[in-house]
Length: 161
Length: 146
Image (tube, rainbow over all chains, first blue to last red; front, top):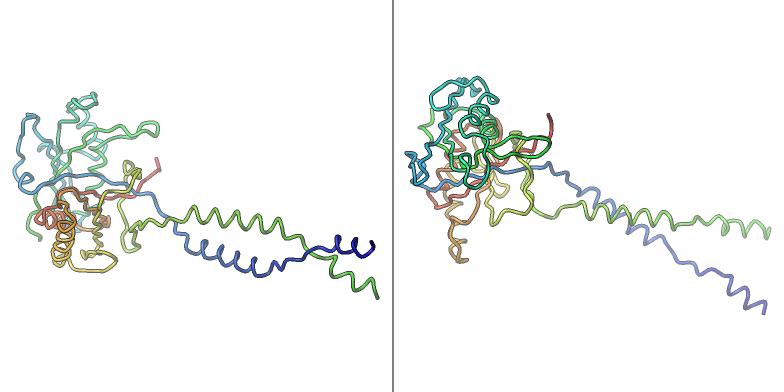
């Protein structure tokens, strides 16, 4: 009886060491391979060859908005112009685009049909183009994106200086 | 003496909470780790945009071309010249045609540095157009500020 009791109370000792070793190895592997990915998004542009050259006004009969971004020799932004008129900054550009296409949104609205054609100097820093695309393609209101113009294209690049 | 020998067995540490926690941590890191080949490169400083919200699903059959501020292109992790892009794209195109797909269904993701020249971005787009690609995605970093 005494023997039985002592057997029961004897704990079966599992050797934890290898398991803990492996577990820690795994943990350090996952910790080290963790890559913090910054959130990124895309601006979709559809530009088949041939149509980009001389703005083909198709069946929609909505003339494209031409945004001209000119550059200083060092690549910084020299000036913005919309349809030939100078624009102060990107906020102003957005205001002018809104006043042009109106407030209506939806599949058949003016904003949906209108196309923006970007005409940029060769040496212009690309960040400015993204700012311009941001300005014309929408606004953020209360954390929600309100889309403006989705169709964006570029004029063909001029010969590099 | 007998008491002394029984002492080390009584100082057994209870491993259970530690192992629990460690497993929790492992599961956390496993889920957080992304296996998707997010082609991010330290050599590229993407421009910021408030509208560049992360896309929900992965882009279909993307080809990623990254343009550095110096005007060279990173394609599949390799630094190549702007002129060599055409050859690589030709290969991509033939692979697509072999798989029975048209090049115009593929999306070319352009990850250009904010300080890169716009003309060079347009050159890349033009090279892609000549190879028959027509869907482009200009990538920007999501700017939560303001």
